[in-house]
Length: 191
Picture: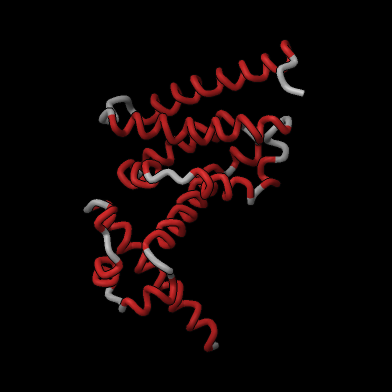
């Protein structure tokens, strides 16, 4: 029984830290955010913060991981049916639900962390990716396209409705993938 209470406290404390970080990150410049700001907002001690995180960058990595997990969860059946275009569109629509927060995460882009998340779930992509070159070339293209297109849409004032932006971006990106497939077949570009 004691372990369950400890686990629940850890969960609640991490949630309070993340919520404090999220609120403060949206309201101020991330560069100026301090551990003291977070601990004051979460109403915890610095010692408690450091029991959970080594610093703000470590916290941000945890937040990015949770963000990626939320995206994977939102994809649901798209991943099961291996429908890449639907998954891409749904990812953009997921980002559009909380555009300010999504922009904060996407503009603080750490490709290695995102790639680690993708790479840690190879079973998800095995049937989704028709050949090994997709993993080397197309997946990085998709990740960069999602980030770039979303950030550009956000920075330009989000005038285009989210559904139209997602559909247009998906068509642009996947026409490139179809061309990649054709180039491999027609020109034997890759070994």
